[in-house]
Each structure stands twice: as structure tokens, then as C-alpha cells.
Length: 238
Ligand code: HEC
Image (tube, rainbow, N blue to C red):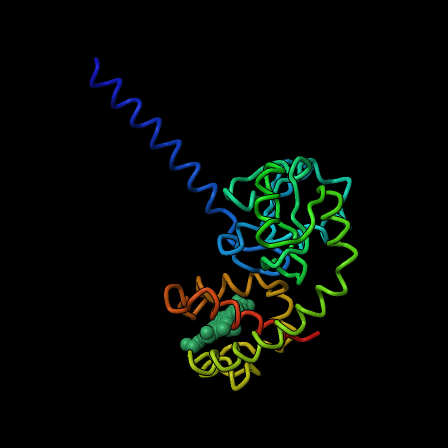
């Protein structure tokens, strides 16, 4: 009897573990910029929409873009606590704004903390001002111009790095020089733009493979993958 209940508990625990781990694996990339959520976990924001789906974004920069389009559709807004990485209610968080700690997609970081005490400890060392969620959101919306100027520069850098990497990894053998088409579809073709209409799809195709193309899983670092994705994205037909 005892053995059986131990077995039962084991099965329940491993099933729960399986489901929670599968759930955490579900979303790898920010749907807007395709950055890896694990890498940018400490600045990630999580929105639950009225249809019950929950989506993670790399930063308040990307989450605030969604807010501007679908404000009334957002039922819950959560954020990672910068100090513990736990996901907490964003409305109750204390934001350290404009410190010398790096932000994501912005030159003015807006980092969330679960307690004012912890936020103050970080402020002592890294300066910046402490504000509410509304202050952080307002900052993200009003600072978009400044964010975009920085992002543009970064994208240009990543894209030229990606261009070299696509050459190095032999992509042109099939997709043509500069991805203009060969044995495989050109990245500048209308057809490609139609099937690959966002950066996450491009990333997933590179990693997972597509038709006659073998996936590059384990052959590229996350940074290389991101640079190649950005380069391919900049080549698309507009
Ligand atoms: C051995 C040939 C080959 C190589 C090397 C190759 N690809 Fe592909 N790739 C293909 C084929 C074939 C497809 C299927 C669709 C098509 O014909 O374009 C494809 C599809 C894709 C797609 C998805 C497009 C879609 O509509 O399904 C992306 C994105 C892509 N490749 C990017 C790359 C990148 C980036 C590299 C280098 C890191 C690369 N490929 C290397 C042959 C190749």
C-alpha cells in the first residue's frame, strides 16, 4: 500500500513537473523584436489578455507598444522583479528609472522591484529615480523616439554582423549571394516576405529547419542567430 502511494505521488509530481516545464518552454522569443526571453528575463513583461492568453515581452518598450494598440484587452500586467527574477504584479512594483544599469531596447532603463527597500538599495549604488508603474509606462511611451534612435544603430550593427555570419555559415550556397535567391528562395522575394512575415518565424525556421534545409540548432550562439535573423529581416521585400 505504502509503495503504491509513493508511486502515485511520484507520478503526480513528475506529471506536474512535465507540464510546468513544458509551459515555461512554450514561448522563447519576444513576439515584437524576437529577442530571447530567457536572456532578457530580468526586464521582461508579461501580459494576460482578455481571451486568457499570456504573452511575454523582452521589455517595457515592447510591452508598451502592445498597450498602445490593445489597452482595453489587457487583463493582467506582470513584470520580472529585477532582484529575484520572480514574476510579480507590475502595478504593485517599484520602478528604478534611468539608473546606470542597462535597460532592454532603451537607453533609459526601467527596472522593477517588489519592494521599495530593495529599489532604494539599487538606487544608492546605481542612481536613477524611483517611480510607479504608471511613471515607467509613461516614460516608455514618451521616450519611444529616443529608444528607436538607439535601436536603429544597434540593428545596423547586428545586421552587418549577420551579413558576415550568413556568408560564414554557407547560407548563400542555397539562398544565393546576399540571399537574393538560388536553389532556395531569396530573402528579398515577395514569396519569402509572405511566409516569413515576422522575425520569430525566421528564427524558428533557421533553428528548426524548413523543407530541404537542415536546422541550425546547436550550431549558432543566440547572438549569432539574432544577428542572422536581423540581417535576413532587413533583406525582405517591402
Ligand atoms: C542546403 C541548402 C540551404 C542552406 C545551406 C540554407 N538554406 Fe535556408 N532554406 C533552404 C530551403 C530548400 C528552404 C525551403 C524553402 C525555400 O525553398 O526557400 C529554406 C528555407 C529557409 C527559411 C524559411 C523560409 C520559408 O519560407 O520556409 C529561412 C528563414 C532560411 N532558409 C534561412 C537560412 C539561413 C539564415 C541560412 C544560413 C544560416 C540558410 N537558410 C541556409 C535551403 C538552404
